[in-house]
Image 1 (cartoon, rainbow, N blue to C red):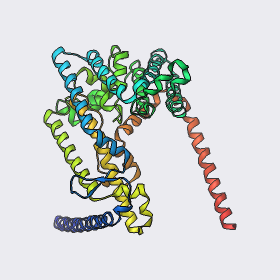
Image 2: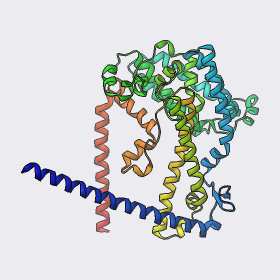
Image 3: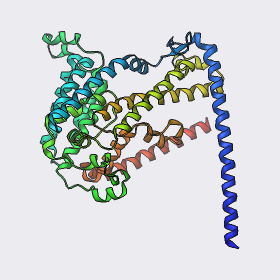
Image 4: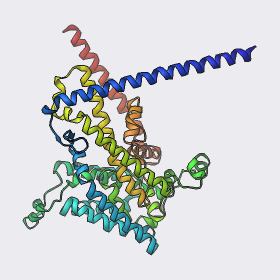
Length: 438
């Protein structure tokens, strides 16, 4: 009797789930049909007031929205970038195959290729990058075994991050009149903007070298039992990251090639030094040639989707032109929702483009944006998906938190947080009280 009741309840539950799913699908179809129709209407009737529209190639004479400077520059330089990275990866892979280079040999190849790339981007300002990077290398080598090393490492890197911003990348004339002429050769891209990623890599190198002199807490056997990638005979990214590389691989050339590695230099994703040096030694085997090819074809499909979107809907042009202020609340919501999806597609294409070239070169990095922006239902999920590689970088430092110098400051941090919370609560109560007695 109980079994029959349970079966009937189960069937009823399945039926309810099907009905609920059908209603949700109908709602989604209706929502997107309305948004698309309204977006087409807005773009058609307001295009004359919008900035950043150029002649389109997909549906002439329809215009194309290239109002976003970052996307416009990336799109314009895409043929040249593809040629450069095609040549770079071909030379690197041929060098590995013909000369059987391992980590040290490949680091020289990639350092040479990447410095050519940086010379085009930053011109003479490459000198600043190399000087700061060299100072960081010496600092790590000298202080890595000290208990207070994390404090020294963070202080050094944050100091230069701050100075780079304050002095806008420095002027050669400040170091003497004889160097003034070098200010005419600053390249096409501001070096101190890209240097933010270099700082993360310098910190990562410092920590990996620091942890290489300590007993590892990573249980590789236990991980292999739980990881479906490792069970299949491949090596997953987490093992590459957590398994300490030999101290002989913490050389200056491998370090520099890690900092300026061309595919990841401009935009990431973030990769740890351990993972980079391991794959410089032995190329990644997580992705097969077929999977990497399919990865590239999917990227081309998304690029086509982006071109279709910017030819039909002028979301970002509405945002930069300020024309959205004249629209109704519903139209503002649709434009805002469209801008978010445009931004997601833009960064999706940029990050996966560079990751694709790195996979061809045999180096895997964590995937940014593993989930669609429309599948992120809270701020935490949005952050973890959007900046996935940076989030993993942060989490890794937190996991090793107890082994660092900052463990001694943990109680002080908790006390400070409590004090700040109390002050903010008191301030809120005071402002509320003032508002009430107005």
